[in-house]
Amino acid sequence: MGGTNVWDAEWEVSEEQARRLIGRQFPQLSSKRVKRLGWGWDNTVFLIGDEYVFRFPRRTIAVGSIRMEGKLLPKLEAYMTIPYPKPLFYGETSEEFPAPFLGYTYVPGSFPIGLTEDHRALSAETLAIFLRRLHEFPVQTALKCGAQQDHRNLTDIASRKVKLEGFLSKVVEHLSPEESGVLEAYISSLQKDRVETVNALLHGDLHFKNMLVNENGIITGIIDWGDLSVGHPACDLSVAYSFLPPYARSDFFETYGGADEETKLLARLIAVYIPVLILMQAVDDGNEAIAAEAKSNIMRALSD
Image (cartoon, rainbow, N blue to C red; front, side, top):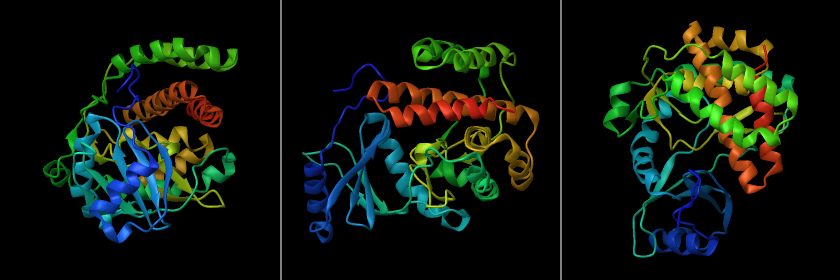
């Protein structure tokens, strides 16, 4: 059962269990190899053959997102300028597993871990165009498909600042004195309590573990759409700070279509906040590579 961290699972699915669940509901896939690719806070992910990916919820809170993805993701195709997983197989609850699950087209690529700053800059325009089109998707259509509206209260800077202060106390021993000093100074500098509400369809969780690159370090896929929601576009625009080097940000925002100072303020905050959470989980999991990349994201976000 679930533990004390927000990423602890209520349901763990093994490769053998995934093979049985998929084979019973989709017998045409029963002969294909099943390999666990990894897991996030909400889902465990399996590669089926070389063609499909299946995601099984790890927590009750993820069930609604799986159902929403199944309805909304197919409608995004005309807006997408970067490959993304398209739902093809809709698994139902059963006695063996108490939640629905989804099978998607497989999007190949690697996580953008350890890229040079110049490699990152090569994707500035690609990411800006992708987000501009995504944020143009009709909000009302998304809501009708079950997307939640600002369920994380994204515009509340004050409460996020308080949480960051608490997170810092948990990860400070895993940061250098210089890193912890930069982060502490940034948190202290946050004076604005809230920004104005803006509504757009968001990927909602756009960080390095949900982005894929090719062998040249170019963005080739965006995965894990379980946080599709309606809210402030700064949530997604945070990649301008966490992923891109400072010298590529002006081109990014120019291609995207501009962003006011409030949006940039919130985008930078989220670009720090999410990697801090990823760092906390990586430390808990003992994953040094992910922890190092998360710290790199935090320091990049705080660089001008």
